[in-house]
Image (cartoon, rainbow, N blue to C red; front, side):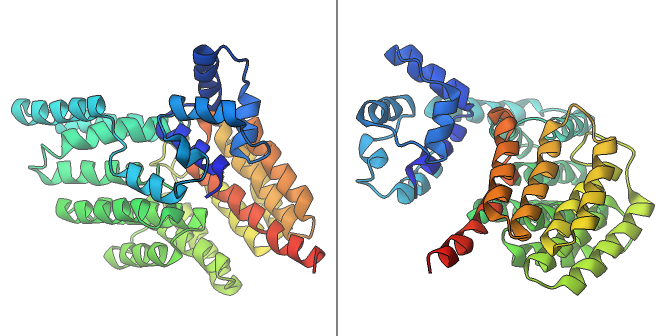
Length: 378
């Protein structure tokens, strides 16, 4: 594991932006470190010297030997993941859980209102902020699982929580998506059962991660109900992305057409919620799908349609569209230009608004540079 990726993961685990990490080091050591310099570290453009390695060790609370590569970095992160919650935070979570059990906790209506709020905030907040807050809510709601409606609430919270882990992890995201599906089954609510599985399928398909799991969850959603719904739409589009990434163009295009028909019956008017799929968001799905298939004309049309209705308060999704253009450039043969274009779009977005999905998309684009680089030197 590269040092830059480790610094990035440790920073995000604390819920810090690159600017906050720079400020913490400056305050402790009297330096003038900038956000841009931290960005260069994380992108492996610059390697921290001995002084800054020591500063990072103290600021991020990680053994210096790990940063210096004397200890396996990936193994260290895996070990840390199991105890990532600091003792004081764990104490607060335990207290909240017991308090909820003793008091009965929020009403079902209050939980539904919380879900609405989180659905909106997910669209603009960074993964670290959402993860930290949802973890507390999950501790509370698990003390109240006495009615089917609360199981439905829990399943939707778990789905949102899963979205804060990269699907390429292969364990955390998939574990939570599967848990969410089981919780939805406990609710007996077919709408929740389909939505949870569909949301997981589009997340994994869009990210290009755990495609087998995406297909399984999507197929389960389709088996539960064929009634047009946002959950079904997500499931079908998730399968379309999985097919595209496998190189099955015909299946991907057929599923995209199925998705369009479902959207015509179930598309939402709500614009800024993770529980909604308005016209602009449907076009974001199509933009990446068609870019992956090499249909530049169709991808550009989808991008233009999305931009016409994309709310200004959701800059992260504008970044998605720009990165799709970078992928198109890379696919057309301009690998270095496409990679630079996508990286520029990502860097223009404030770090605290970055999502794990954007990071995975950047990795997908950069991977195209690897075979190109090999061919140049062969």
